[in-house]
Amino acid sequence: MLVHQSVRMADHAELALRINSMWHQAGYASSEGHARLAALWAADFAAVSRATAPDTPAPASYDELRPYISRARQLIGQGGNPVVVVNGDSDRSFEQMALDFDRTPHVWKILVGGTKLSRGFTVEGLTVTYYRRTTRQADTLMQMGRWFGFRPGYRDLVRLYIGREEPMTKTATADLYEAFEAICRDEELFREQLAQYSQLVDGRPQLTPAQVPPLVAQHLPWIKPSARNKMFNAELVEVRSPGKPIEPAAYPLDSAAALLRNAGRWEPLLKVLRHDPEPFTVAAQSGSGTRTFSALTASVSHSELLAVLGSLEWAREGHFQPHLRYLAQLDGTLATVDNWFLIAPQLSQDTRAAVPLMGSVPLTLVRRRRQEGKSALSRIAGVEHRVAAQHLVDEAARLGAEALALRGAVGSRTGVVLLYPLVVGDSDQVVQAAVTRGVADASKVVMAFTLIPPSSATDSSRRLVRFQAKDSSQAENAIVDALA
Image 1: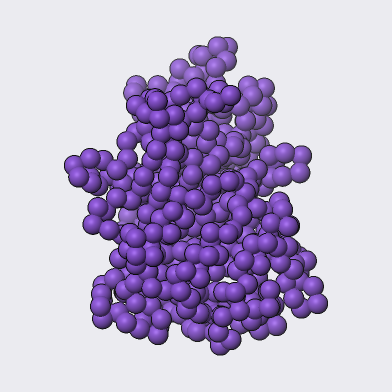
Image 2: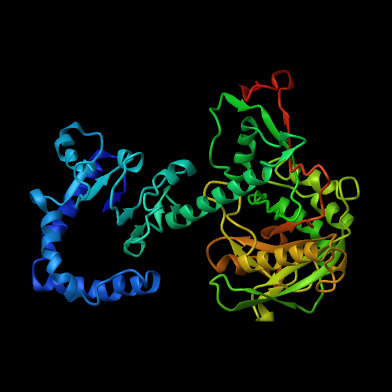
């Protein structure tokens, strides 16, 4: 078992003493202790193993396990202490010598520690993790995820106890489960993009290692690529996304005036949304059955959408510019997009929950969180909504010239837009606060979107990214001194 809560040695000693006391008070040799273990087996382990590892051998009841409990208790408590502290404290070096996994591959102990335990320390046979340490660095957080990558055969025995409301500041808390989920998704997306950009164009790579930092900064904004007195010399100029989602997240969340102006720029397109919702059906993420949602839809020209996108304000200047440069060329310069199919998902069947925005038909407001300490939302599109939008684009590409009227609007040169009026917060009260006399307050609403251009929106070069050197006189240098 691994317990990781703090980097402070004093905390490790205090926690080790607390766990040691709990162990000795638990009475695992008594009938009461066996009764608790039997209940835990029936309610947790037996049920999970049946569901996740039905073909793996498992005891039929706790009675089959009971003869082994006494020996396990002896091994864990060997030496009078079930806990081993793993940190840089030289006074505990003798204690840590017991963790020689080469000589003793089966160590039956509870390990308490900090940085030393979280990085580069392999724990053979780890099955239980108690984790509560917070950090703002994605790479540091990933290193501490010691419960990832278990070998086949005992995955159903792995247990993770993780903090969902850990203090970050005096007023803010962190959901560590959500944080690990987010950085895993970010890494998967980054790997997908590197795989896309690895294709050679005219025998040359589209992307070099020196150009990766601006790409990383765009998708993992909390990771600092270099020291403050340095800057990376590669600047991302253009990102082409034929058939792939574009989902910017850095909206001006702290400026009511900017949100109001952005909503006003979407007004012409909001007013053409049809009054009658359309049903969309997609495969359920669980793998069984289907899910249905309804949405208001409309078809707008490429020039109409580009006029809106080109006028939007962002939390960071130039945030959307690499994508906008690409979209601006879909007027026939690079490729041709005839029109865009707007989909505004309605998240409630109760029409009373929908409200007009900037003179639009009634729309349901969506709640989203912002990334801790960042002017960016944690996510935009719902999973089912993105699957439905991607299906329309993929089907249009598959059918080619025959894709004249998917849902009456999507052809092979049609893109899809998922459109969301969002309010930022954790409770339903933030939605109520954004509505006044049955109308949405546009200064409290983020007009967020996800775009999927048609698969045909590219040229024969197949180039997907373009960079330029910030300092052209040092174009071969990955890092240059920051400008004064």
